[in-house]
Image (cartoon, helix red, strand yellow):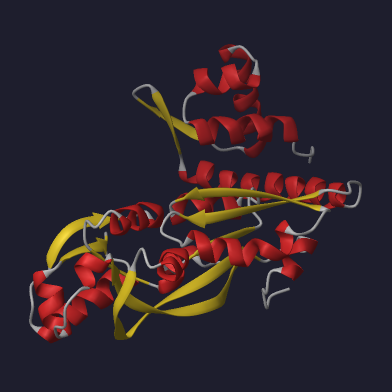
Length: 291
């Protein structure tokens, strides 16, 4: 039996991810006909059809999806090998970190501080939603993802989840919005609030609190970005239910004040990594139990 031609597999890998033969050919600097011929040779070698055309796009067959899964693993392993060996050849080692947009910048800074102080480390930090960051993590284009939300069960295969911290949630706002003495139910129902969007753990906990207090909150804004939440609460748009660490500097200076701690509500911070045969050596400095 003849061995698999990995050039053909690389071409298939690119077409499968792009989903369009012409665009993939442009990226690979090949003619469309030449790329089609390479794909046909791979199909002949495997004895299966890998794509079916629907309109202008190519869609993977069942055999194509199986092949892509193996190709992803093969090429990710190759990238891991190059990155691992390159670390021993350079004095400035790159570590790529992803962070969800809803994560406190202050927390990120505290977490990364050991690396930022090292002369032999270069930190590359990218922000995004959890799904896109997990894709990069599984493709070994990130070493670690920082998040305040857990991935879905179907996304946890080969994933290491490390709980880094748990912070209490407080009601925080400008002095004008936190002035006066009133019980929690009254403040929550009469003062505009800045709430997290979606159905995340914190929003669900807040909805449960509103139900227990039998109140309808005054929602001024729903935000999925912690930096924007910080700007809005500083601007006096409303009270924010957030960990104090998010606005630590503003609390110290008096720009913002904490009016109440929301009992039994907290936010957890996680570091997500994948099992690797050759883990990134700099991860040992980041409080990850896995390493």
